[in-house]
Length: 94
Image (cartoon, rainbow, N blue to C red; front, side):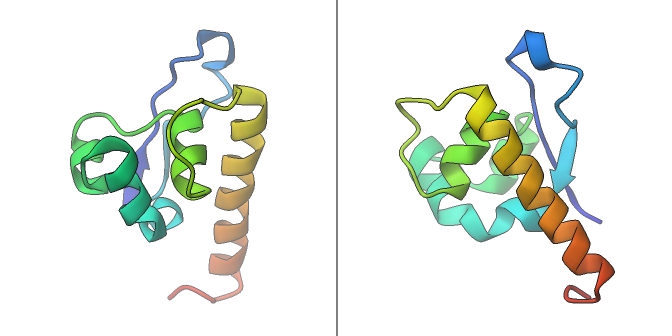
């Protein structure tokens, strides 16, 4: 499984944040990542990935600023990962 790196800038929650998410969770949002960061997902991954809040904005089609809080972004991203893994288990992605 190809992985996309997650960096944590919220040190109060560092232990909660996964270090990687499946690439397939973020890849459908390539266009928004390009709009928000002027870089491809591949380039962002090479540079250390995105933070949870940045991922939220990319995955919801929103501009990067104003940045949502960690409390909003974290459950959203984890839910997207859980949904993807559930669908993989059901054989939706093969």
